[in-house]
Length: 605
Image (cartoon, rainbow, N blue to C red; front, side, top):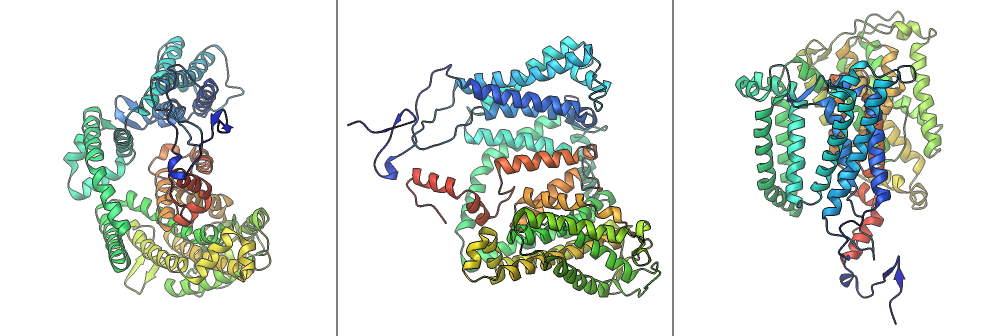
């Protein structure tokens, strides 16, 4: 008797070790036309949307490779390449054969890229022959010059069709190369782009170390990497990617095999090395770069507090900015002499103790009546409390205490044991102060995560009903997470008040809570290293709600990019950039179990 069939294929029997994925030959022109049309259409729509937002025109000012490529053109080239690469992706399923990459991936990538390029070709012709300024107000005449390469519209239409097909073909070809070559290609692209994006930091650091001749050779005097230097950098990074991959894999394997005291010593060595770099590096950087590092550190401190609430306890808090505001205003009232009701003018460190205690009480006051709610209901309530706190600071009723719409000004610097004063005029001192409190917050978060309280938080995050059935007092546990997160957020507020020297209600809008939440989700909920990486990438490169990043050209598009990154993260990698191991197993347990079954190994739990 023949075996039962699943999706037109015979069902395999036997032990899991005998049920290996099927590898079948495929006709040279057996394409999934629906998938090609879908991927190409998505890329075409994305390119048109990006172009009409006027992003390429603004980003064209930032050169990547002089004079070949700018950031404006790069954002238009990514989508056809990604579509050509993605159309060849195969999902491993039980009983469904996989195909070895071949000509189909190249042809499919060519078709996807051509369809994507057709979108910009059509847009170029439409902008030339029709007046679209009325319904589409963001695009400017410079966009037409950029799309047509300062030539006729028909030239632009033809060239974008060719460029899209070439980029899609390149994405398909990337499927054919081995893992080592693919990894080297990706490393080269990221290294060259990263060197161009970090130009200001590299130049600043080179000046501090006396290495100006190196940066003069690498970068063009008007910005961007020289094309010959880009080739040299690409060759060097490709060589390091090929030769260093084996050693990196051996180092990871060696570190993973360490146990007990040896693993603790290895982790301690990495921590000491990182701390040394963070302490020494600002000494060779200028004011602008140190200011950027200080802003990143403030958001790291805020994200570490929210990580306890969202990442460990699973409480969706959309009003976290309230604790940031309470910390700032409390420090301003206690240290400033501008308030008409109370002027204690106590030292900043003494005021910090009051700030932490008072913010903890505010967190208890906000959380106690609503902490029994779950999910979306709790998120909406915290959102309301966040706005209530901001409006209270803005109101005329409390203007005698908090200054109303005029806010607080002339806030004194943060005095540290009478040895030094920290304010915004010296960003390096601000960074060191932020670094010290970030280290404190990291240690507190690390100890709490591995404590009995941390395990209770994670149990509530995984399943609150089961945790309650196991005897955990979920109300008190969630309330403690709320209070601890509020205390850590107040530290950032107190430093912010001393750094800026003034506090206004407009600095604490709901957008700040959203950005901090995006940082936590993007970096990896529940993972301290992931949260730090998320703040460094998002705040350092794009900037905060009102803080500039490395790419000042993204100032008006940062929220658009935040939203796009968040959507992509939720669809492709919901565990985050650097995920927590436990969180990854929660989100991908079914996939891990299936992969382990196909490979004949028991799934890890």
